[in-house]
Each structure stands twice: as structure tokens, then as C-alpha cells.
Image (cartoon, rainbow, N blue to C red; front, side, top):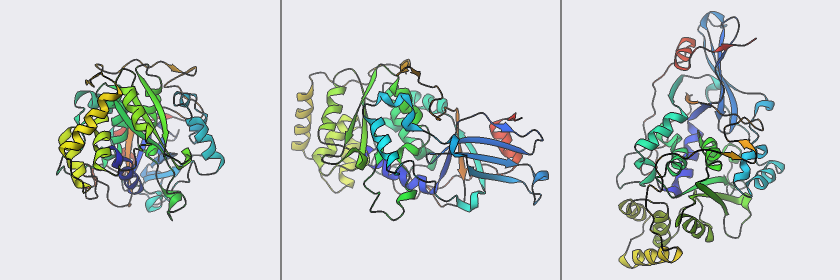
Length: 385
């Protein structure tokens, strides 16, 4: 996964595909008429309600999506674990005060009526997949790679963070805020942020409590953090802190493409991508990887620290401790943890592909839209009083 393109592709995906990260156990009404799931989608708390046919006005039942009350919306700026990312809380507070974040929810496609609902993965399943076969999140994009499916793209950012926590990456870039489009893009209010992708916030929270991982925040050079902010997550063992700091020294951003073959190569090497895939990325962007550029980047990395980057830098996930006195999985500041992600599909268009990160991946249409379908996929809900 070429980091500079990940957030841009994710933004397009999240504008056309709707994924619900389930954050609370399913619930059912006392009379059995409605089955409800609550979760995060595009940075907002939504409710997905399946209505039994015999209780619906049209007799056909269905599945509806609506925003949860304001009191249930995420409050990331008030989450204590954010203190694990020095300076981020201040940026979040500034964005909230200026009205730039959280952004309003885009109009629900198809009037909020779902044509298909599919349960496709969970956070634990994603962690297991990264641990067992990390190449997808670690190697970069091969030349001629097929487009990603919408599901692969949706969990790409979280998977990259987890690949670091599993020891398979030494440095990972995560775009915390994209602010350069706020005033220049007509649909700025509907632009999805990289953090809105499923499991990204949860993976960041887990990383904040991992003693083997640290982070530094990097704004665009010469710009305020509210214009663009990237977190450089890295293993604490050398040479990874030194390499992450070097990326930060020239303001590298996860959502911006480096401008020269040298910097594209340097960033790719620090992020641990395979050389052939870095070469393919440079070629795709119109550049050429010469022997001189390779030798220069190699020499510059050697000057940062004498240790050789060896992966995995540890075997398996580390233990998660506490951050600022709050257990890293604890419900805090209106933000809750969950154990699943559902793909909520409406009439909103096709997805964005993996590989070269271009449009064209076929949209998966498996799933159902009836009360029984949804209840079967997510289990019988606990009845609400």
C-alpha cells in the first residue's frame, strides 16, 4: 500500500460506500418489531434498524439508517487516550472550536433505506489476518496489481497500523487530518477524513497504549497543523525512531505524494515497502529510479542510525497498557469500542480499487435487507426496556 495515495483513495471510497463499524451490542424492541445496530460511519454514530414486515406500514419491512442523537456522537477531543499523541488534543480542540470538525454527515443515499446489509469482518478478524499474512499491508503496491475490493480499501488504514503493532512494519504514516481542501472544494462538508475508515481510531487507541510503539505528529512544513497533520507511528527500537523523525523533518504527509524519485524512494524505504514495488510506484508517477538515487537514499538512511532495519522487530502483538489513566479499550468521552463492522450499502455508486488505487473494483452485492437477514447476520439483540 503506497502510503501517499492511501488517504486520497480512502476519501473517494467513503464518499460512495457506507461501512458501519458496530460499537454496541445489538438490541431488539420488546415487541420484536425492530432490531437495531449502533455504530460509527463516516465519523458519526448511526443506527441501523431492521423492521419486521408485519410491523411496517407497507407490509414489506426493511432496513433503515439514521443518525443517533447528538448525545451519542463521538467526542474524540475529549478522549484521554489521545494524550498518547502529543499535540493532537490541541488540534482537535481548535478544529472543534472553528466548526471544522466534526463535519456534518453527508446526505444518506436512497433516503436512508438500505438495499443490502452484509457483515464482513471484525476487528479481531482483521488483527488475525494481519498477523497471519501481513504482505498486503507491508509490501507496497506491485506493478499491474488488480484493483482493491471496497472491503480491502475500507480496512487498509487500520490494517497498516496493526501491521506495525504486529511487528511487521517499523514505521507507519497515518493522516490524522486533511485540511487543505476545506476552502477550495465545493463539497468540503461531505469530505470523509482518513480517520473515518473502519477501525482506524480503535487501532490508534491500541497503539497509544503499546509500550513498544511511539508516535510523533507532523504538520505540513510552513503550515498550521489544522491544514494537514500526520502521525508517524514507529517502533521504539532503533533505527525506527530516527527514521520516523527524518520523515517528520521535511513534513511528509500520508495523504500527499512525494514530488521527486529521491523522496518517493526514501519514504518507501523507511515505510518498509519492497524495492520492486517502490520502483513501480515511481514509474507510475512518471519518474525513474536510477542507481545514483538509490545509493544516495541508502547512504542517507545509514547516517540516521547504524542499526539495520530488521523485520519483524517483534513477534506478535504487544500488551496494551493504560494511557493517561484510562484503560485503552474503555468507553470514554462518548467514544465506545465495538467488535464488528458491517457493510451498509445504499444506491451510492461503485467503490475504489486496491493495487493502483483507481476506480474500477467491482462492488460486492452479497447480503440481505430483511429483518430476518440482519438478525441472522448479527445475532439476536438484547431486548430494550
